[in-house]
Figure 1 (spheres, rainbow, N blue to C red):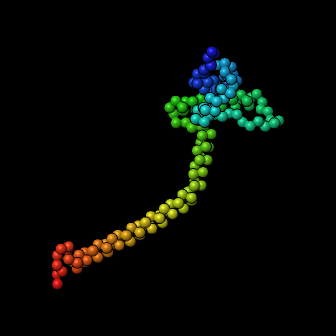
Figure 2 (cartoon, one colour):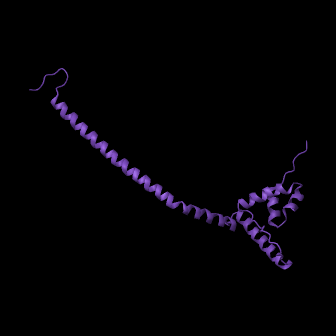
Figure 3 (cartoon, rainbow, N blue to C red):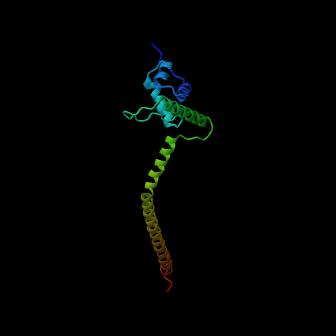
Length: 161
């Protein structure tokens, strides 16, 4: 039985950070492009790699000089992110955007949570009121029993008249 090829995940990360294509990395390890894409997506989701693919617009081409500048910026940004993974606290722009979106989604929940809190406060106050009523009823019952004991003689005894 043939053994499945394995890849060195750290080497894949380094090659992707250097700007090599997914197909180039796949050819290097002798695996499919889809296998490397799985690793790429995992790196992007964890913030270790910046998604550099932009939607393609028909008819818009960048010149070689612009592509070289953009490519070098992407590589330097990716290297700084890799350095952040090793110990510095660097977060990718995509992750920051995701965090901001999550924060706004959380803020949308505040009115609902406030309404729920008010409901719990009302329920709490009703419960406190009910407990007070029950305590008063128990107290009244104890007083009645105490008076009854004074009036009714104990078993086997005579009436105190």
